[in-house]
Length: 279
Length: 279
Image 1: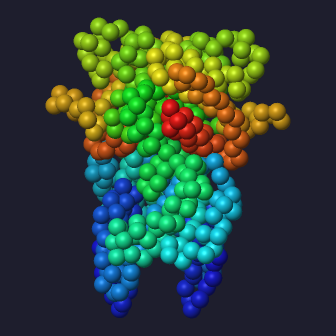
Image 2: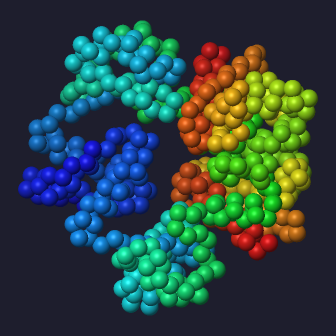
Image 3: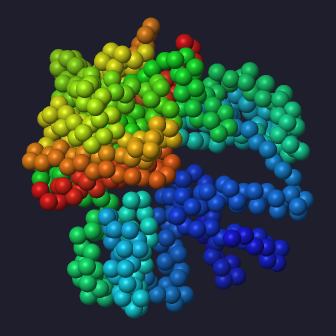
């Protein structure tokens, strides 16, 4: 329900998130936009660059002069899950006029930090991964320990994922790592389940078992228990086994179990993106 | 920041959800409570029963006289994801006094719909599943198709899950169902991947492969494509293979891909709860 009373607008929405979200997207935003324009407000447009591999302060350093001196558009940074967002905002008559306004600044941004931009606007890294995988007719499978299926779930969240996604083995216990993934007991003994070597072996094994072009392996300590001085809670190894090369990265995440698992999924998507982009 | 101005209270919270949630829980709620009590408001207590297997209108029917005639406590129903919540609310001096007030109504509710109550207050069905599994020293593994690891992820969201959780095979393609789960090609051909028979075979296979006490199999059509008149989008078979018996249920969910997958996970948790409760 939306009413105007004594110069103020009131919008009353239902509590259940599913109902609220639909009504907010489809009715509330258009209502607010319409009413603000009628009252002489300008329409603001914005463009968002999603940046991975740089901290917020590093982005600010690299774009310091732009952020400080730009007025049209203005630039602002924002920290998201595993990424920094850079937002360009300007008043404009329409979308096309907006793109024209931001063009010189956008070029300068891309020149300076273009290689770190992993997605734009409403796109996610995952959207880009899926687009590239489909375009190159690659296929994918995962072997997960601490994330226990979360990467697999994310890769199949997009309709039509059966086109490129084969499956996953969630090897939560060492026993399953041996039995289902065929990781040698001696390797587990020598390096421990949370190690570069096991992440690589998991990625390679799932790629071969499923006949996929790319296999991803994740093994880490999500906590709150199980950490040690040498291998603390939040240490997560992510490996990618491709047709031509293998990559493995050690990640250190600081936070609660849920955060560490979410960040591991983001990091795996990013590793996939960086690999596929260069293929 | 919280200030009082001209008889109104204003609370300004930061935008990032992680920061906001902490500040809301730890500072905002206590601040509101304190200020309301000072201004002579009564403290309200409530108890929530989470009900599965009955629709909201069925719950209302079965408790019609209580809902209509009760004033202390009042009763209200609310629809959640895969469950109906029944909330009892009353003014009380403290928690103990509240429990005394609701005792007669609670007894009556439990007499009428007790078998459908699956969790209370902040507990989830999953919390109860994990408590029972740990208490009975059972172990668990899953074989997932349309949910692609979401059930596995949920079962490991609770710290210490390695105590009871072995692992999962996400068999997204038929090929993987054959290769990794050992489902006979002839069975897939005869009944189709989305069938009671395949759900049962998946549950049994993962239980045996991992040496778990309980195996869960999920196969369904999350959509938006892949549905037919006979097997529509939203049809999800969930099977449980236990040491002593096998169960399989056909579920029909109506909604988007994300909703169908979320509901499938909830339904699988519920099936687990009902099975373990009776063990």
